Amino acid sequence: MIFSIGEVMASFNRVVLVGNLTRDVELRNTPTGTVVTDVGLAVNDRVKRNNEWVDEATFVDVTLWGRQAEIAAEYLGKGSSVLFEGRLKLDSWEQDGQKRSKLRVVAERMQMLGSRNAESNGSRPQQADETPW
Image (cartoon, rainbow, N blue to C red; front, side, top):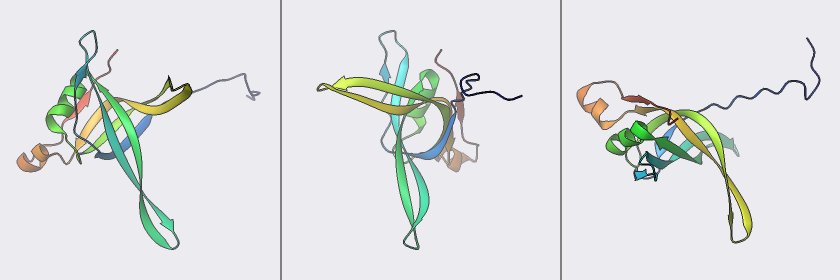
């Protein structure tokens, strides 16, 4: 079957990132009482420049909701290694008369990697799956 452009519009919005938190987790509540946090994630990539391997960091904001946010605040801190799976969301706003926008990840799944508790007692890293809607 052959389709011309415009006949079929498919989309897929999934992101999987593994990196380290750039700051400690700070919880806040929405006006309706839902717990939420925005964390910074540094994702490193090795690239070859001038015949030398160099680490290149990409910084991503990740939003966690509900129980996931509470677990992150309890067990994670700056430097913690974590995997996030979720979707991209575009935030847009106006500041000083200029239109601004920024992509962020809304996490739907979080897996702690190499947490202190897992290392000390031999248990596997904790996993949190929760969607805020």
